[in-house]
Image (cartoon, rainbow, N blue to C red):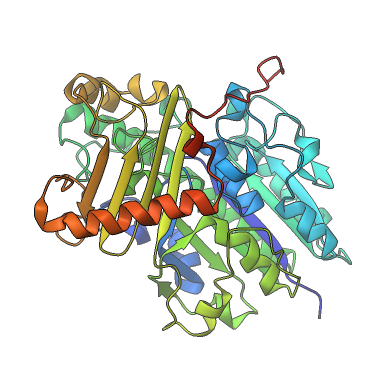
Length: 431
């Protein structure tokens, strides 16, 4: 039997903003019937995390199954960073396993896309031009042209949505219909910002519906693993660019009609990192999983839903608009964050968010000295508001998590242990 085709559809900045992910931590009133149906027909993961709350570093981890400080992609491609050529990527591994590999639309891992190992790459344009409506004809043409391929294909579809500035793509929802998440204040500016955000998510859902229709029409649907995910948390203050859950908790929906493991509407609550996607795909198609990666296959969890997976999730941040090195370890019950540089703000608000309505509302309100360490009891305080570092009741928990983080940094050869991380951007490169 022919190996399954694989489509990886990855959005920008979506966090867990999808109707079927409506929870007290990320409440929403979105209308996403096509993706909700995909989740109902397939499987969904509620505790899926990225390695970094920014685009390029997170995507680099998906591609390599390594943390950003290991693969070298520690900042944004549009600011001169690029995944070093020493790394092996998903398309490289899948090519060795007999797949043809293709990219349509956005990528944010390399300045020179040729270094990523795809057989074909769609025309390169400015990032803002990779919106789903403009690119839809390319999705359709690809699927029509590859319906009878002898080889299975891997198709990575990258889109600019759901990135700011929202106004370029958005048809704003009614401001009173949105739900305000607990990490944001509930006022007119924030509601307006959220309504614009909703107004981009809904149209992407419509495109997903059209892609599924094409897969069915071309006969590709049954033997295609369709993966819908995003790179990091939502583009709002205290989410993107922070190590709080709204910055690192993301969505993952998978479905392959002729594979029992990816059917039935099962919801998985195990903690999983996006470094685990690559080895899972290799495991699924029967390819060898490389030894020198950090991820591990979660395929066994799909076979036995009672199995545990990760007991800790590690995340990091290095460069974004500025150098702001952070590290964290998250367990089921607690989150420990270490801030390595002093800052006059509680957390960084990236420039694109700062210019938005939510950023305007919050920037001046968070201007106060940031703590060097943060500790949160996630069961009692899921919104990570009360820093328990100086609470004697949690002294032992602090000690244990501090040591876990240090051990991880040592085991993964984190350059931050030696002081400030070297800025290795290819500054002279054309972006």
